[in-house]
Amino acid sequence: MERMQFKHFLQFYDFDREEYEYIFERARWIKQEFKQYRQYWPLADRTLAMIFDKNSTRTRLSFEAGMHQLGGAAIYLSTRDTQLGRGEPVEDAARVISRMVDIIMIRTHEHDIIKRFAENSRVPVINGLTDEYHPCQIMSDIFTFTEYRGDISGKIVAWIGDANNMCNTWLQAAEIFDFKVHVSTPPGYDICPEQIGVMDATHYEVFANPRKAVINADLVTTDVWTSMGFEEETEQRKNDFAEFCVNTEMMALAKKDALFMHCLPAHRGEEVSAEVLEGPQSVVWDEAENRLHTQKALMEYLLLGKLTDK
Ligand code: CP
Ligand code: NVA
Image (tube, rainbow, N blue to C red):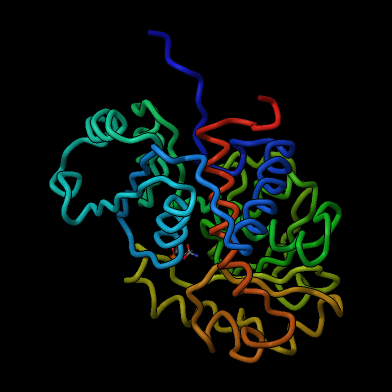
């Protein structure tokens, strides 16, 4: 039997702008239906497996609740208590798990792990965060920006802090949505655009001084100084990132109506001040909620394709 064509969502580059526009349109409709308590069960007989190799609140909840709300079922698997944690090859796990479920989400360490998993999977695989990328989060962030301010094309996004999975994904997204990222990271924590396939330097600019990076920004965003898996560097990073706190003074340098985003969890007093996180420019709670709506649209797209084409 010939296998149906299917796609994975492992990094932001995996979709083009038109696909994101389609997913956003669906997410808007799905969100509106959900808010009206209207049942929508297009994935009634589908099962999602969620494999976690790192902690999570938002990603687990939004995928699990999202799959239930679409009429399907979700199964949580942790590497701590599956055979993956005892050395079963990723390739074998992928071959087995993908025979039993319809779609798989993975949160893990090196991107190579999810790539190998996807290469051996019979069903779509979604990246729920790797050391290198967090595409579901940036999808939600851009959707949230659009809700507040309309099209993100031509806008300036200031990234302040670590050159981590969030930063890398913003850099990929800038090319696809045609906006500019002003990046400011401490010395020694520089971005490596070519390692993440970003060859076009017109969509980002590097600033040594974070205060210069936020000038004229439409969106200021940051993330924890120490990502999961790098905990032994925490104390060193607290020193190295000391000048990279997004506080009220820094926000005042951005555009007057600039938004503030953070994927959460946040450390008040480190990468962001409590005033900014809780302040009028912060949209972090909508940003978190939109994980649910955008990922429901993502799963619908990966499993059912473009509904309007049918
Ligand atoms: N932002 C995000 O992915 O949160 P969790 O780590 O709680 O899933
Ligand atoms: N950069 C953070 C994001 C957490 C959602 C991490 O990888 O830990």
